[in-house]
Every structure is written in structure tokens, then in C-alpha cells.
Amino acid sequence: MLTVLLVAFALLIFHCIFNNRYGYFRDEFNYLSSGNHLAWGYVDEPPLLPFLVRLSRTILGDSLRSKTETAQINEALCKVLCHNLCCVIQSMYELEIKPEFWVEAA
Image 1: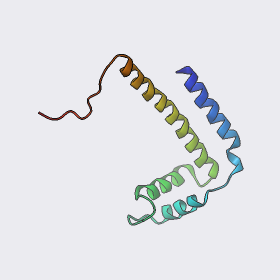
Image 2: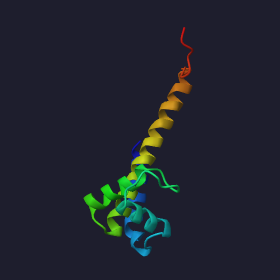
Image 3: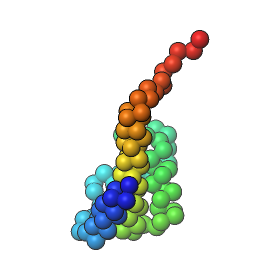
Image 4: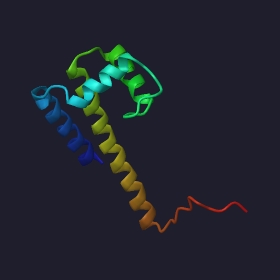
């Protein structure tokens, strides 16, 4: 577990150092625009995404750096979560525990 945390932290630091080399991706301009005009009827994105964009801009501001840092922290947390999930699955396999997710109701 410590190794996974160290690798996730090292990748987070690596991304934080080099994240200022790129600007907005072209799709992000669409998301920012739809965040300014909230509606339920967007064809190209789910209705929650513009709301989350507006919420992010309200809380973090408009800087590109704040958005990329948030995404990088989420990436590191997802890596740790996936590792823990894989450990649980491996432990279940080693202990010969068979999960019954779709048990029919009697």
C-alpha cells in the first residue's frame, strides 16, 4: 500500500510541475460556455456537467491551474482507490469467497 501511495504522490508532483505547458483543450471552451448557460437540453453532454463546471468556476475561480490541480488530485485518489479495490478482489480470490451480487430473490 505504501508503494502505491508513493507512486501516486510522485505522479501527482510530476503532473503539478509540468501542467503549465498546455492551455485549454477545445472541448473545455464548450463546457465553460454551457456552464454559463445552464439548461437540460444539451445534446453533446449530460445535464450535470454544465452545473459542475459552473460550481467549479464559482468555488475555484477561472484559472486553468486550479482546474488542472483538481483533476490531478482526483487522478491520484482514483489510483489509490483502484489499488484498494484490486486488493479486496485478490483477497476474496485467495480466501475463495464467491461474491453473489445477483442472487435471485426467493
